[in-house]
Structures are given as C-alpha cells and as structure tokens.
Amino acid sequence: ANEFALMCRRLGVSSREVIDAAATKPFGFMAFYPGPGLGGHCIPIDPLYLAWKLKTLNYNARFIELASEVNTSMPEYVLDLVADALNDRSKPLRGSRVLVLGVTYKRDVADVRESPAIDIVSLLLSKGARADFHDPYVQRLEISERDRAEVIPSIELTEQTLGEYDAVVIVADHSSYDYAWIADHAQLVVDTRNATKHLKGRDNIRRL
Image 1: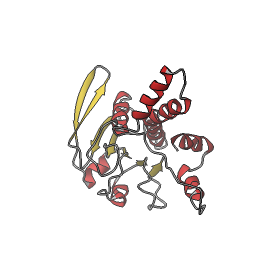
Image 2: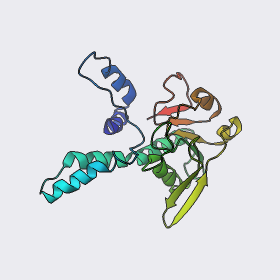
Image 3: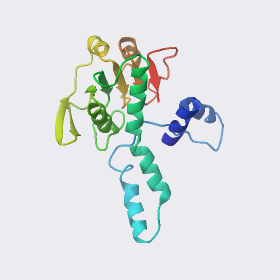
Image 4: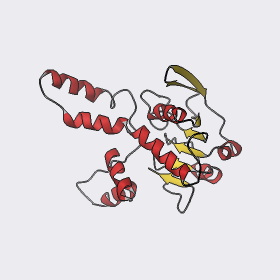
C-alpha cells in the first residue's frame, strides 16, 4: 500500500480514491491503506528475523526486504510532502515551524516504539525546520539527531498555537482530535492518515 502511494503520486492521482474505488468490489478484495510508516514492537521487526534466518539457509526473502525498504522510507516521503506543500505557499522548509500531531505508532495508544513520527520529527529538524509535537498520550519525545539527543515536550494545542505553525502534520490519527477544528485554525495540514477525509473542498489540506 505504501509503494502504491508512491506510484500514485508520480501518476498524479489519489491513492485513497483508487483504493476506495477498488473496495467497492463486493467480494475478493480487502482494502489496505498507505501511511507514514510502520511502528510497534512486531511488524517492522519480526519479519526481518525470518529473513535473517532464511539467509542462513541460503534463501533470500526478497519480498520481506523490499517491503522493509519501502516502509522505512515513508518518513522521508512525508518530509517531501511537507516540503512541497510549503513550497507551493512560497515557504522553504528550513526555518518553517512544523507541528506533528500524534507521535505514537498507531491511534489511541501510548506506545512510541518504532514510531515513524520519531523519524519524521528528526528529519524535519535535520532540514532546519522548527519542529514541535502534540500527543494526548505522550508528554515527552526523545529525538536522536546526528551526535546528540534532544527531549521535546508536547505543546499545548490551542487555536492560537495551531495558527502559529506553517504546517501541521497528522501522523497518528487519535480519535480525540477534532480534525475540522484543526483544519479551521491551521495554515496548512499535511494528513498522512486520511483523518480529514470527511472535510471536502479545503485548500489548506494535503493528503498522502
């Protein structure tokens, strides 16, 4: 699904619209959707143990390795989306204020293990953006950037703070977020989870 999103961007079509159209088939199809990357304690890691074991038996599990390569590249793809969205508004990524919403590896949990949000925040900082985050389940986030580690506190989410950021990036689509309220007060929203799918005709929303 993540590689499909990469292809759809090249084609200039919405991956979500294509998948939703395919899901109208009444049988023999299960919809899987792209996202900012994989997280958690098992899916991003356990298949690689299997691939390693198979290498000891002189077998190359190419599909596992390819899937891992694509999935681990998704934070960089999100960075490109943010940079392009800002560029369309005549703003460079360097020096821009970017707020990441949701840093856990999936919605409504307090687990940041292998979360793609950590990589996204780190990439934003490495490119010179001023990155912050908010998450109702996480108070502090440790980011390793080059030779140093930085602990970033979760900010307070208000109308004023939303409006102060050049871009707001939805990474974990927690059910407690009011996405219409966020879109109303944010200058620009980059939605990697399709959390704003019910918001139509908003020119300040970009979707993965």
